[in-house]
Length: 281
Image (cartoon, rainbow, N blue to C red):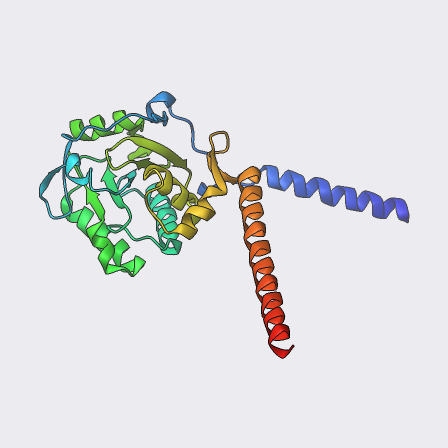
């Protein structure tokens, strides 16, 4: 009887595995085939390189603007290269950035600026304006409109900017979509590339650190500086990681401060007691 049950269970397992093997794959299961020219859509970090100030685009109002108009404002910048009619990845990038901004106490236009630039030359300022209105409304900070810019441009100007920051992309005839990577690029106020945050998830702490680095430590409160001192960018993981030595330094300094306060209070009380004793005597 036990042998029969054993064989029965084995047959069920084999049938189950076999049925999974022959199940038709649904679209979500299919893996995207890598493009032939993978180098064309790669992201090559160009840290320390400066973008050109004379590259020209159109803002969300349809006005022609030079990139230089957004530089030298005493604020670092976040550069997001996407396209507005992207069916998936670009939405994930912008949503990831939005979530980080939502948690960030700093506001675009105050401590930093954002340039969201379309890599699709066929897209229009009207589309850019619609995207801007949606994200500003979702963020719930109307004042951020002054510092979050949505741009469109012509092919040669787009390529000039993307080449300068190492952002590769190409049009795929099969999918009728642009193939590109996923990253946020941080620039100093002069337009020098200082950091890349890759992926679609941009936590508040990572964005704050990257902006702080891009601003060379000139933005944020004293408490921000203390917190950010405890983290350092790790190029291997592409993220900010705690620095044990810095944490120990801050912990040691805090201990000395608390010890000093304790000794000061103790000394003050003892002195008061001595004065009272002398007066009573």
